[in-house]
Length: 205
Image 1: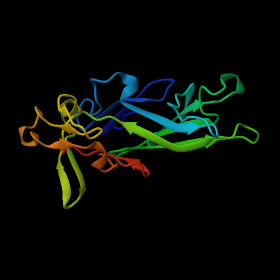
Image 2 (image 1 turned 120 degrees about the horizontal axis):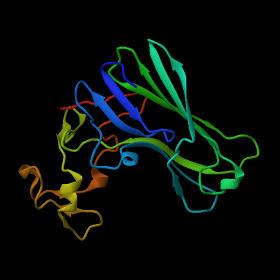
Image 3 (image 1 turned 120 degrees about the vertical axis):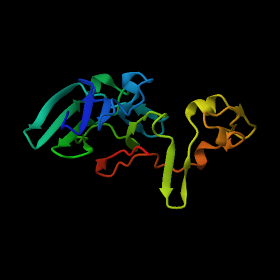
Image 4 (image 1 turned 30 degrees about the horizontal axis):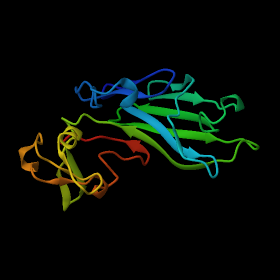
């Protein structure tokens, strides 16, 4: 999908976002990751009184819904059948990606269908995940007075684990100003870098 401003590369038939180019930047997604681990949908669900599971909602087929000079919309479908049992969440899923002429972002939405009589389930979360290049996106801004440079995952992996669960002392960070800080991932806001309201947009600072 390419409108001259943004280019979205999708895997088929899965419907993962494997490339996202903007304004001459080849790919703002983390190219160190395998293609299926850059941009994807998933759902957290479970059968009643059973452990939770995660389904990547991978498409099985795809088709162009709208294709003209003003808009391109592509659908990736995943159809459930009783034969797969509990391997995937028992709903039909239609993932959509939309690119408009002149737009600097793209839209994505999903249609979920659970026909009458299908298994009862609990679905806690459906999300779309984008893993951005850490060398480009190292700054978090939540509000005017809550913003800062962030450590990378490599900084965390190279840090010193502390007694408190998940706490890491940054001993050799890529940004020297972060040396000696304690990294607590659950203290960070959950709205990391991108939004999932209607339109997805990224900023490079």
